[in-house]
Image (cartoon, rainbow, N blue to C red; front, side):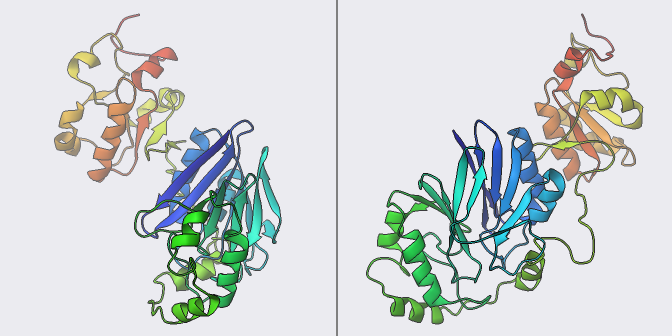
Length: 357
């Protein structure tokens, strides 16, 4: 079974793709975004995957890659095109190479034209291909900077992408209209730049007259991506809170394990957001916890100290997860949810006040 997730960065309209072998749990991540590294890390951890590689379709001009941040966290190898000119990668890919993850693999197809180092990754059974900016949904990447070459792009798309089976699903590097996938057959027929009876000279003339503005992030993104996303002259910063060993869920909630809270409860504010009858009910409550029902939390947040970290608690972790969102909006920075709530706390036989056996 193939595990597949399509992820989106709204700031740059970039798609990131996670693929994994369902049996071995080995995974690859295509085109990660620097600002989304925490999100991607959370998904890898929650699905219990081993991230082997981050793969770049090209040196991006509109966002900085998250490859170096993910390598720092997971030890994953950074793979880029040999023709990209990027420094600091672990693997430099060439046409016809294969990237294996468990029993699955991706074939590397060189598709230059948008940039010199554009790659398309084709799944081993040719049911999916990841085209980066070489071929977009009813469009293609621009060819007016970064060694762009309209003739090369036309030939790349026709020879290396349109040669795939008609039913092969295509996943682009970006989309600005909310479209998520297309197919070889669709683009052969309907792509207004490259499909139908459009010839190479037609395409070259079209691309020369696009008149697009300069990419806003190019002066920052390209130099950073030529270093595989590593900041110049300094180490990567950690974006995880440092006041406790927290885990970020894929839903974007920072969580703390019951064992840590049991050992360090006096160093934090424990805020129980259940109703009063639950607080004194069969599950009891954690010693030292302050009762602030979720419905009153926004108005009573001012009664909490901003100098001391907060751990929110409820029965199973759902309401307290929402409580962390409320507190973040109120300006509290050091906030975490107790993973599993009182049910997990009791199951691990930690101390409670009140409650019943």
